[in-house]
Image 1 (tube, rainbow, N blue to C red):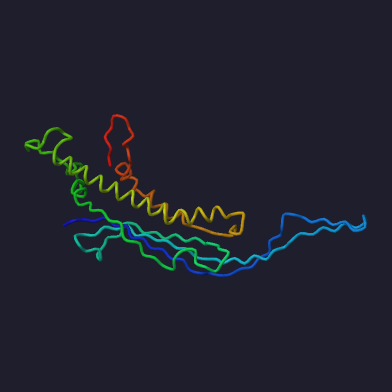
Image 2 (tube, rainbow, N blue to C red; image 1 turned 90 degrees about the horizontal axis):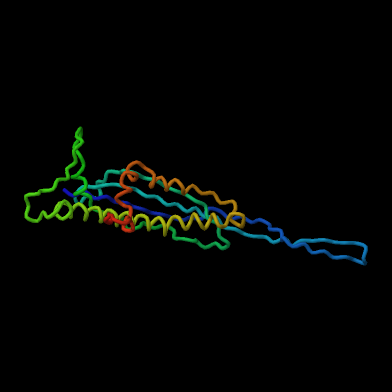
Length: 219
């Protein structure tokens, strides 16, 4: 049976509250009356802000055959941040379930060593007519093809977070010191996805080494 690695993501944005505060102008107006009395004043503006709760979650899992409804969860995380807008209009979508990102890893799973063994399952049949060199043979081609697919999946995962999650956090960081200085975010917990032991072990497989002189690309 095949084994598929899947990343399922969803996010939502909901209204929390409305708040009004006063903002004092940086410019001071000074008026002198009859060369005796000096009056200074500043403009005070009322600003209404609208606060939104943006949530993003992901589930990393594997499932056998054609049974995505029976997954084995490897990792799950949820991040929440508070957004601030100047109008009562949702800055994102109310709710969205993203298409799952999947890659079949059956051929890679078969290469894992059995329990209690240090020997992997990758072997080259040198007796085959198609076996030309340790690199040019059906087994190596199949293995590199599986790694290329895994690398492509990793790029799609990276694109999802780069395009969906990080812009939200960066936009709020840019507002600090301004109207959004009260924002609180903990989306950083999602970055743990890149720091777990499983993904750390797989990192060399996802790395683009095409620019390394004298080495073949892993992707």
